[in-house]
Image (tube, rainbow, N blue to C red):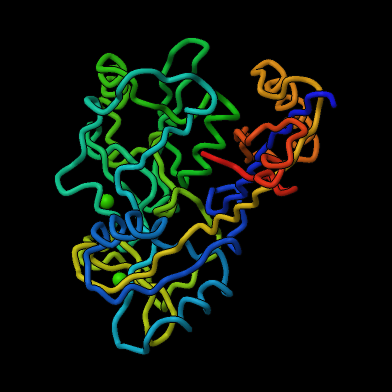
Length: 330
Ligand SMILES: [Ca+2]
Ligand SMILES: [Ca+2]
């Protein structure tokens, strides 16, 4: 009888959920009744589950409501408003390098996101920054990259109308990239008498959620979010109504976590060949072919692993061990 080798290939398919690209239905939800601050709740969820919940639609909102008790309080969800997540309008158009923060001086008490409505930035008193309601009409500062000039447009517009104007006639609303640029801007504004002037700084309200995903769905209670006393930067789900409220992040509340559901499918293959299946080279060739096959089927999250099984000759006593299956030893 020819020597016959048998070896076992473990094809491990790891189909995991919970990553930003995967649909929310691959998540499990948990209500945790312990009282914690928003940050503590986030750490707890990340340690014991995956993260604080993101609510993508009314079905998830309803589900969370149904797994929680009816109490006249709220429970934290993964919603928070980062007061310092500013972006430049120009960022996508020109490459801005280096830290800009040392040139960005906030006016006293700013940014305060007053009434949860201030998501655009104006220079106040020509030097200091203040977050203001994007719909407010102010003069604005355009930047023209062709001749590195700053143009003060005294006609008052909303932030986005100002952005459109600058992008049409110049390059964009201005950024502040350096001390020199800040000086030039101050010079441009000098003597103009403007109180507020838009610059290119803005941010997205309540985005992203704790798990770094974003969603257009909201379920705010009436008059919420209101950023009461300018200290409410975390979101909770009211356990009597299911509506959302912004709240002071250091209040201790119960909370909702989710688990990314990981579906693991293990496929074992028994290969029989006269080739030496214990040869690393041959194993690599087989693995490569299988990988190609998996990828062509659109499966990207998998591992292929070889496991050693007892090889045997035509020997009855050993054949019993093999048992017709794929006995493995780690
Ligand atoms: Ca403000
Ligand atoms: Ca509130």
